[in-house]
Length: 330
Length: 301
Image (cartoon, rainbow over all chains, first blue to last red):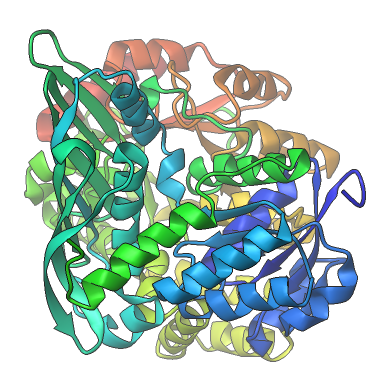
């Protein structure tokens, strides 16, 4: 590293850019040296708020800053161009990209290859891997607490567009409902079960942005799964992802708030966030942001692999692409 | 400034927004009438009858409607009002629907422009032109104060307009001492007690000490509960920070750990805390309102 404190840039100062900037700013071994943002209005305010930080309008201007790492938090459709520019211009070797990695599988593959050549650390912001409930569920699965998983049902629901406002333009600008919300359920499925792939799908397309979607997947050892994604669920005031996993020796029910183990032959257990040591040194909105950024920064310092990396995230993009193309791959 | 002897027993508004921090599943099982402003106002008034002396709420259309009903029932003078701004959920959702921060700014500008609050409009426009965050903050606070006063009426005792945790914790992370000072100055000018809602109580206490800002004359609403839920970095550190000051400034929230704890064990813990100014508890049924505030009254009244 170039100094004791990592020199970090944040590209894109929307909601996620602000969240990551704040969390990075409280990490003791990080110095935010630059913020890059296209909107002139946001840049003008950023100059008042980020004292001593370079506020720039183009990623190419980051090249002379001797950066150790960059966070790409622009809207999904621009992840590819921004991240490619960072690698291609040798701006930085260690890159964190907010989910999803790219807007299609070809772009994701290209970024994965660029990241490999850079020999740096790379990571994609699949935040739900840092929820204590999903971590507990994965731990239970690895311990074979329900034996061998045979099937699962998952969902990613929100009420974001229940009132119909902004459905088309905004959903498209956010990469569609699969990239905006469904990617979490897909990523967790890959994390829980390994190499899943699409087996069937039903989609309803609404002016280019996927509407509510349900699709089936297959996994190792005959595992079958079904995932549903919808931003029109009025009961989901907060976006939520959840799973019911059935195994040879019981079931696991998990969502953002709790995990429940139901062994076939014994007494069940339920854990809430309260039971799973959910506190962090600094919490902004959700404790997971701290855990996520800390993992990436520690991986950069130690030059070790961070998960989920580009390679794993590219699999999510690949599944989303196949759903959008309306095809099955077996 | 804050009355340093008064103990505030506040009705919290989470159930009125159908929020549960234990589990979203719980909200689906709840009686939906609780989100109806008339029903919610009835619950607040039942709580007042049983020992509550205030209402702590995020400023939203729902809570403003509740205030109007309490005002119309002639009970608004019976309690202290502690408002929290902004209602983060609404603004985050609006940002999601309008394409981000720039879209959100446009929506808010329209709202401010159509509010008829000319001073706030002028201050806000000036803030935008000069990219002055302090002016924008003042314009925003003026807007929220104005609509809260409109709904609560001239007899309402609005004690504080607390800054929501999203703003407070962001400003803490970015070391925005000037923003805290601007807010405090503006609140004092408006004859409100400055107040802060945070998920990082210990961090806030340490920062304010470094900045030489006297928290004991303000209000801090932060999670304090027996199981350390939402207490960052830990229950021990939060308690240490609380003990390090001298004066009643803490409003303990999430005392039930979002329903994880029994009322008696929750209150036993909170009652042991130093520097307690009060506590807020959400209620969703008449029976809860009666039992909860009778019990709190017996411990704190």
